[in-house]
Image (cartoon, rainbow, N blue to C red; front, side, top):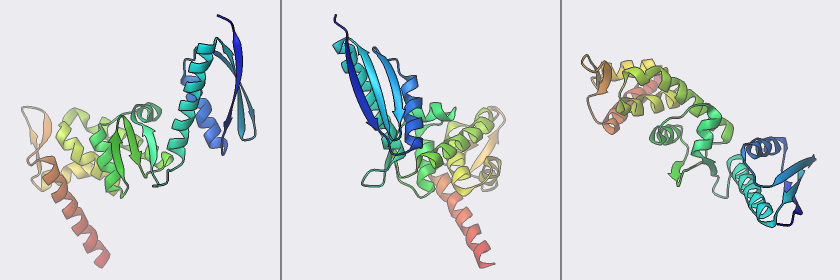
Amino acid sequence: MARAKKVVVIHVQDEREKEEFFRELQKLRLPAFIYVHGKLNDLKINIQGTKDEIRETTHKIREIHNRVRAKLYPDKRGFYRYDVDDLFRECGTSVSTPVLVKTIELLGEHAEILEGELITSLPFEELKETVSELGEYLSDLSHRTTKQIREVVLPISVAMGMEAEEVLDMLVELALAEWKEDKFKYELMKNKEQAMELLLSRLKGEKGEEDED
């Protein structure tokens, strides 16, 4: 097929958007050859290939730019959109989506998962910090806790600024969890919703007492 050329111009608002776009662009396997020239807030992308290759490449470039803008800038409702798999890859860790959503909610932010995307009011840098912290606590607890107990401990630890070990100890102290010798794991004695509600109530009560003092 005959070779052709096309120039696509991408407008970016700042260096952060430019760097994020370049980072995403480098991940792509594009069917056409591209050459990128950056100038101030414009990126000029020269594309060479067949018409079909150019069309597919252009589509992928536009797609990743839209994805970058969605995670860097809020929409009219004040929400950002993040591809969950990309987010976990970037943070070098992953947690279950229920844990992630509950943590963000406990931080007082909006969070929902829709078709593999996280829609939240939490900005990008804060979200990465949250995911990284969840990942650290997960690695500390995974070998000696059940999934159910982690879905209580991890969100509360991050949202309340507590060590995961401290939250686990409180669950045991309140008889909401106990050590199972036969399983070599801590296990919840109530369902996770009840355990979280009771533990949060206890923590808020303690905070109220501290405020009074």
